[in-house]
Length: 97
Image (cartoon, rainbow, N blue to C red; front, side, top):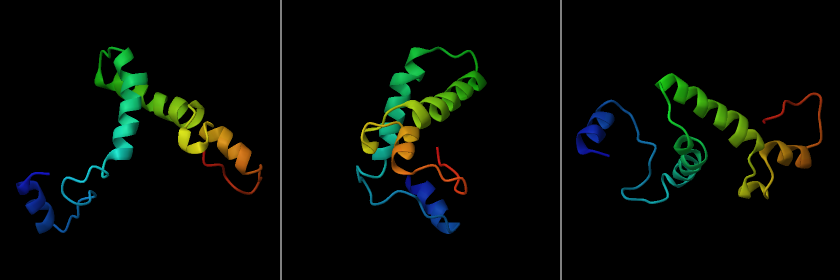
């Protein structure tokens, strides 16, 4: 982060969401997600407009990544499969995925 930006943030009571300076762990989760999105979605296409790109990214993240794609952190289940395997259907409780 630049010094003028951090000074402006401090003056306005805004705390940065990042941790210590030069910490490689701050953005690890987001960098991992963005690498996957770029490899599986963005690099495979050429978009005519920003709106087309935004719609395609939204669909990929909401439909493929969050619902169908398997995740190693979930034991190689998709989020939907993981919830179905770990939480039985409960009529009174909304599902997260």
